[in-house]
Length: 573
Image (tube, rainbow, N blue to C red; front, top):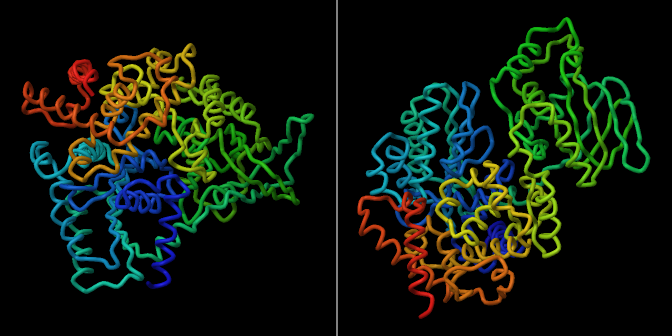
């Protein structure tokens, strides 16, 4: 075996072991590995990557379909209600095909060429349903909604194709290259919008190795206009205050021409586009050179560790910009450094790693703005306590997106607030349809949030719900290809049935979950759960023959059929 291929295989195997994924199907494992590599520099979580996998039968030559709006991953139609589309909105579609083969093949491109006219069109849902599996169908419908909005409001669309395989190097025939050029042309033509970009990347072992080895440095030097003022406060920490030239701050937050998303992961919200406040910042940057910028702006707050001050510079580690994202993005997107630029932005740097202090800083530096309470969920006492409890049990409760992923924790032991809410709603409250159809609403709506994260319920029950759903997903990934495709939209429903079979109870309470021994998790019980679900689908479709499977999985009446069949079945299992 070629050395570079041997190393790539080793990296893949290490990826599975390090993330406790070594027991899943190797084909799915490779799809996860490749999707993780192509998104390594993006603000994408492991849950996002898992959700993006659409490979199997009727996949149109696509293994992963990732949708990003302004660098935030979109996984459900439910999320679209809170997205405002304008001329600055950036829609990014990443489409990847992964094959554990030692060469690039034209047939892979041929499948994409056949799929593009259907995917990037407004053909009927019925036609989409005939051509593609339910996972890909749902992604296409989400994309279609966003595409329509961008066509009306303007905005940018980027489609990034990638083909990952275990070829030692990138060698192609002329015909292969010609087909890629055709795919790019066809995509641009189909999208038919003014601001469109399309690229194709062939990823051999060499490129996969580089991505695997890539580790973004979060230790940066910030250069102030004058030596920053250093202020300590007892044993609680130290802070630095000063002004930074706009050009130096621009360089600080950008890398290879792009804004460094990792610096903003702890901010409670993303860039809001051309809202009034950002238009004013933009106007000040472009037109007001008479007054210093920091006189007219609240500035930026940074939390960091390990400071090394030297003259006008301050080198810091573990950097998080927790306030001033709108200012930072406006500078990153609209600032053009004139030759005689002397304007500056006010920057506060707080050196502290205490989680409680950091949370208070995040909340207090944003409470003067009109912020939806849901954006501050991560700072709730319940969420902080859940994080501590999960840590004590060897799990990583990701209150702030990608916090533990960036620390290199096993991906299979990381759970987000939204995943936990979906698990609780599906298993404990027997409501997988709502968890499937409105995942973000579960935590956005205050009454729903308080019901799900009920402080009277033991954290052990919360953890058990997550473990049941995770184990369902893991065992499900080992099922035959046709089974995975047929029931891909019903994994939360399978988890609910699985819980009843493990407990031997049609309905149960939190204390029942606490008493459940996770050693009872097994593939035989999961297969029985899938059989019961299959009967549920048959019964439902007998009454609603024209209904799409993706819609059935979101139906409350389907939950009722499922619970009734559980009651009829569990005694004889």
